[in-house]
Amino acid sequence: MELELIPHPDQPRPEIAEMDYGMTGGMVKMKLRAATAGYILRKWSVDCSADHRLRVPEFRLWLKDHLALYGVKNAVLAPGYAPVDAAARAGVECD
Image (tube, rainbow, N blue to C red; front, side, top):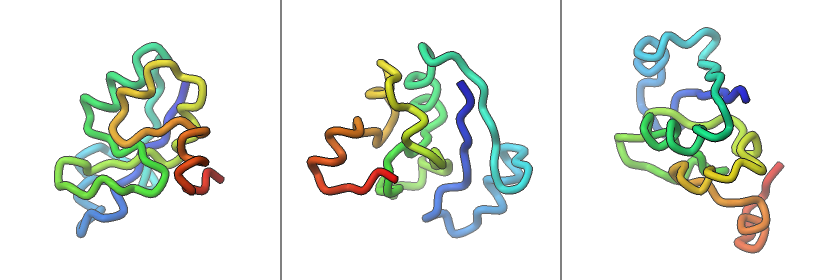
């Protein structure tokens, strides 16, 4: 699968994350196996919430499309990720 990571919207200097991660066009594309997605996103401290609600400095990256993890069994390991049905019950839009 391919995931698109961008600087976390709450980072005051997104250009630093762009340089640190070698982003092109403000994004880095990560190709990985679905079986490892949750583990890798946790290791990289990627905020996988729909509304980028994880607001601590360790989360320098945000998953651009949280729906990219739909159906991935270990996505529950990804920081901030909530299954689509759980997000709908909580009133979070998933578009």
